[in-house]
Image 1 (tube, protein in one colour):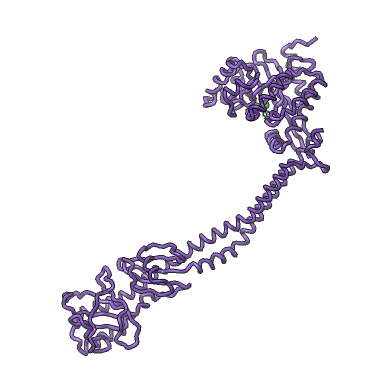
Image 2: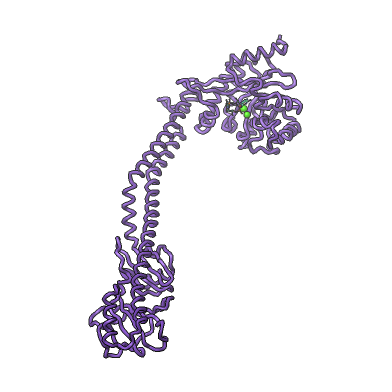
Length: 548
Ligand code: C2E
Ligand code: CA
Ligand code: CA
């Protein structure tokens, strides 16, 4: 009993495919558990980086505004003093500078230079010689910026000094006002996380910087502009017509946010994993159970065969039928052959299925075939059958036990069955020797070459339904049909047209010299009793001679 090879004591199959399904399912379960986690980690990283960039961008803009308004105060103080025409370091002049230094938020001290030397400040006259030095940078509006300038107040931290060209006096006069401002005034921005801030000129030369950042790194960022990542930092540079502002954070902040986000999204990831694992288990169980059910179905003979009449076009007579397997499961549901045949092929169950089909055909039609020696039955042979040739002795024994002539059983194989050309050739030659006719099924849908058609021992070519369907529709495939017919004639092959549904198609095929046709125009595949009735009715209508 061939089925014994496929079932264990419980009736369930234990094939290598079954183990394969379980192994693949196991691997998929592991992936389903890991992938969503990797996914959310990647998403959290991306999201945190995006957030951090927009965070520093916001702060670079604020710093730009803050530094701008501090600079504006300094500029307006300088312009005012210039406009008021103070230039003598008189008591009134110094009193005026004092008032403006106190009023001007961000301005700490004001000084006046005469002939390039500091003569007085808002604190009083200057006796020591303090010459003016060249500025570190000059902003596009003409404001000169000096860095690290000492105040007149002993012990005060060095500050930024700003001066502007006079509107009324020539620059060469050497007399000008200068304001001192602590560099932090430019960076007076409250930050919600630890952040380094900086102000630079448009070339990236730093004017002021605050926070833990290496000055070289800050300079490179300021010079580069825009926003992005540099080393372990996220940075953004804002810019206006005069200067640039920089905000920088460290990635350790982002790392903390990433792990926060991962924890937040963990339930979602676990949910997705659970759904995926459930799906994998469901599909593999279905797969395993369909495999099991197929094996049980074969053992319990849940299969039967329907017969689709084949018509000789010149006479309109039914000259045979194609055997098509049907599966009705114990629960009453039907599984279409397009599903269970490929499935049986994948799970090494096609050979026992072919045995069942042969057994059904012989049981169903032995009587008819013995009576009508010109009638034939075509049976479908799968690629695996073709490769092993195992069905041949089974068929041979079944036919000899029932006295059916092997010439009455035609074998149909699709082009897939000829892929292993050597094995196919061997099986087909043995089949030929046994007396069977051979047809190539679904012709035109595979890869067959003319050379292959010439080499293999073929008798009949079945033109695929898709080509018949195209007849009279002007579709591209309809232009192929005449070539297929010519080629088959050239190779002296019989032609069966599959899927004939209209009289127009039938007329075209008959005129083109096609010998046989099969399709819903004549009949669908019928259960055996209905087929026998169809055959009888059809014979009577055509006055088929009753054999003696
Ligand atoms: P196939 O060998 O190409 O069989 C022809 C299919 O076309 C059949 O579908 C048939 O019912 C359908 N058909 C016939 N005339 C018409 C028509 O005029 N219009 C339309 N739309 N369809 C038509 P079925 O019975 O569902 O079989 C599907 C496939 O399953 C078969 O295609 C064959 O490849 C496979 N199959 C069926 N029985 C067996 C079997 O015993 N062994 C093997 N290996 N394969 C089988
Ligand atoms: Ca077929
Ligand atoms: Ca076919």
